[in-house]
Amino acid sequence: MTSPTRLKQETLSTLRGTRRDMSTAKWLLAIQRQPKSVRRDDAAARLDIEMAILTLGNAKLRDIGRQLKANEAELKAGIAELRKARKSLTKVKTALKKVNDLLRMLNTIVKLPLIG
Image 1 (tube, rainbow, N blue to C red):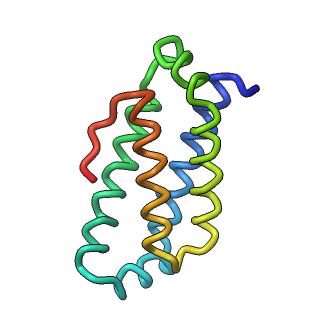
Image 2 (spheres, rainbow, N blue to C red):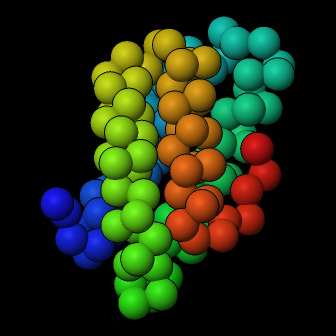
């Protein structure tokens, strides 16, 4: 069992790492080769990641701790899948899907103003 504090920290760390990865030359070069629809998905995912970091970072643990624990298995699975996808940044569509999967799951814990 993981504490709510640790779950929040781990989620934020993964989101921040993803944001960093999506700013690398490798990612940007891979995005340039994608169709316009995928580039739009990338832009939406970047905004959603920023909003998730801000929203989760500002959320009071006492307000979301119970939801974090209730969704621990799904949250950990989403984090693991996203970390795995980040290892192969040239697989843009897979990485974007994993980003969106984690954001949708996180949205059940703390209401996010998602674009994508």
